[in-house]
Image (cartoon, rainbow, N blue to C red; front, side, top):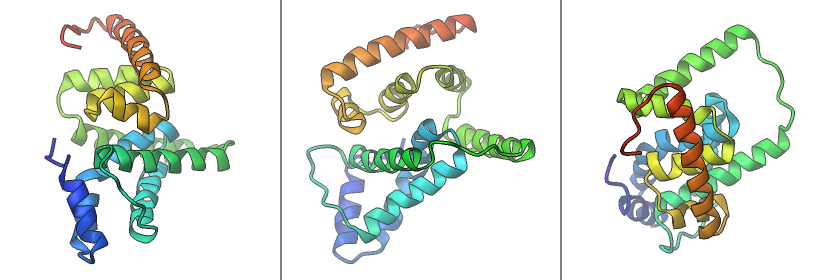
Length: 189
């Protein structure tokens, strides 16, 4: 994955000082991962894209204060998570989409996932994740696909570190069961 651990904070700092290229770098570095993370909340790639746009818009307009207590990426994902929760609260009853619209959404979602998650093992794990409880999907996504620490995931998900450790343990067990159904070798997972 790109080396964006410290670049996001420096890009944001440059943006706040008037360099518009800073926000462009942030969008380029974090857009795909943020969209896929938000999609785990809303299960609609188009809505996830809109929520990611909203997250970047908040950075540009509201210019929230970033403190290096957490990595820039963890901070950005927390902002995105809050946008997703607000969206879910406002739209608790989703309208039915036409079957062809759902096929289009699914095709676009698969194309984005395949460009972001390249090898077959990760695709198998990704599909198994989709069959897990939402909280399990989120913790595993954050820690394995995005590389967040348990402490960073705790901040993003608004849970204690102990709750995250327990959740991660249970999520790994549930994922292992799903992978066993597909005869997947999960030695390193």
